[in-house]
Amino acid sequence: MHTEEQRLEIESAIKELIKDRIGVNLTDQDIKNRGIATFDAINSYLTDIMALGYNNKSIELSTNDIFEIQSQLPWLSITKADISKRLEFSLLKFQNEINCFIIMLASLSMGKDKKTILEEVKNALY
Image (cartoon, rainbow, N blue to C red; front, top):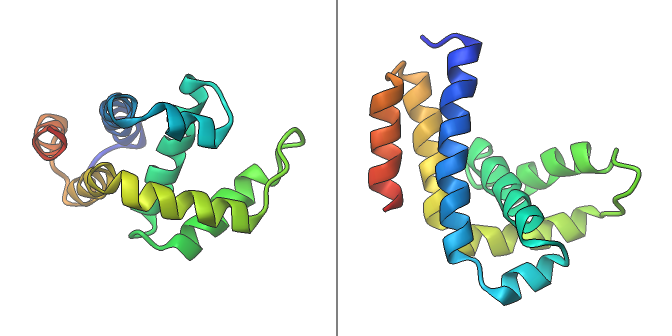
């Protein structure tokens, strides 16, 4: 099994791969729909992808997870309906990226090494 540090290192590497793919797949309209800068939009979509991956693509569970964190941010006014709508879009637009995050989670739970996990995710992403 992996130590917490190893798991975080692998997850960080996978998140960077996914962020690269998000950037490639984003349209100007996708960025405009989020109403934030490109860098922030990529991170927002990454949050959606991770939540959907951790929750096996459940919109409801992912909405609750994101709302629990984001509702505590004093500068952000967001509702569960807003998050749910956003997640529905992300589920359609980033299906492959979500699947890759799920692959990573499954591979981590099987104790696969970093190199193998990165290869599996890269093969699925590209």
